[in-house]
Image (cartoon, rainbow, N blue to C red; front, side, top):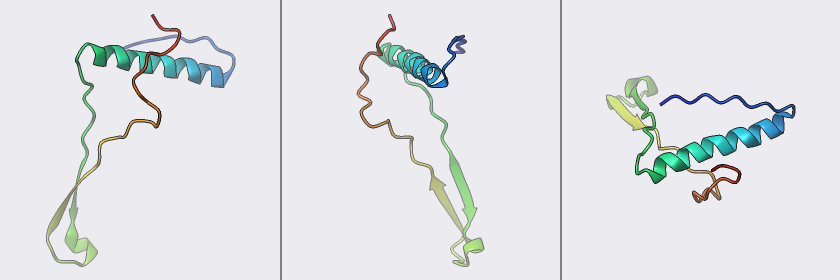
Length: 80
């Protein structure tokens, strides 16, 4: 899915408020349809011998991004 939106705002902070509302509204509608957004999974394979441990290789998985504090999925004001 690709979304284009043109926002005309002279004030950068006002633009950011509008952009945030649009993005959160899109996510809310996607999730309310029972669809989940695929998040990129990052896996780092490091050679442990570079750390002088001699244990071979270590697999490290990056944690999933956390939601913002106070993000309870409520409807964004101003969107239909």
